Image (tube, rainbow, N blue to C red; front, side, top):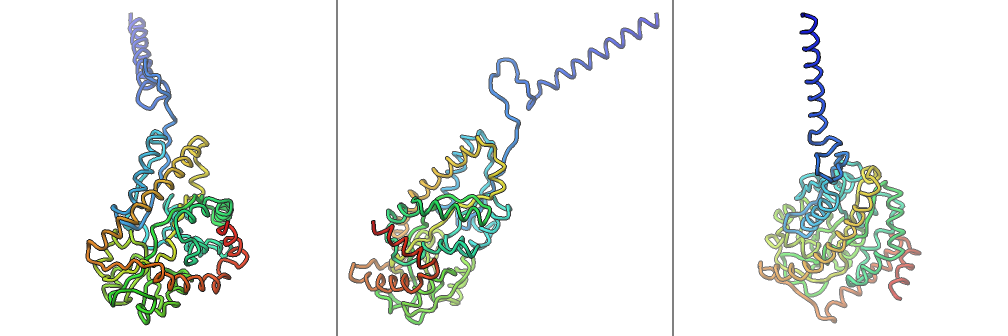
Length: 355
């Protein structure tokens, strides 16, 4: 009798274990889907994409990243998870941000072409975007950056820096401003300390106006203007608005010698680990993002100038004769500084632009 009881208990235990095993196999995340659910279940791996930028949430840079987040999330079904760190949360300068992407502390960020050039001595050709009045409008700018020359530049940067590089976009056209008086001609900024980037072309252009170029990290610029460390500045119209520089600057001149041309950078190791299907989707989304950024920035150029007037800045837009005084000085800088990007390369670009 006891033998029969033991046998019955054993059968019951085996039944319980089998039932538990069946229940576990149909739990969420298991390979087998519930009956009637025909959706293919992935391996569940998610690739984290941390994006860093320096501007506020009203700036096209942030709006563009939100657009990228939307299309990546939709087309990868959440397999690429985007987190956007804006407003200098992760980096306080363009160089710091570019190095964070290179080192994998962030996976995506944009940086000015001159910053990319400064990261490796063999990338000096990237300074070409800073030559004043060499590419005087966005059509010429886009034709150049989307050309075979642009492709070659990106390929070299990828090799030298172990990053993935995509075609760029402008953050608007560069203006000059001060608190002294309206800027009607170059002589109106003579003797002033004008904040520039570290680009030699920026500094040489300011020198040609008779002013003193003073590089200041972008994250420290507002305070430098408040405290009088610098008298004026040069940056794009959209950044005057988004970072409220109109609160510390009165007079603006629409000299428009060049754009701040930003290049999207992606960490090379992160990109290499993506499965082939995600690489295709990611590349497609990045190219759409670049086109979206060009659209946003072109529109922002117009609305930002309107905003500057609304907020009390005195904006000078020049007649062709007035602007030519700035252009003449800028083209002298192109010739005098051809060695920076390489004389042969500058000649090659001039030939391309003349077609």
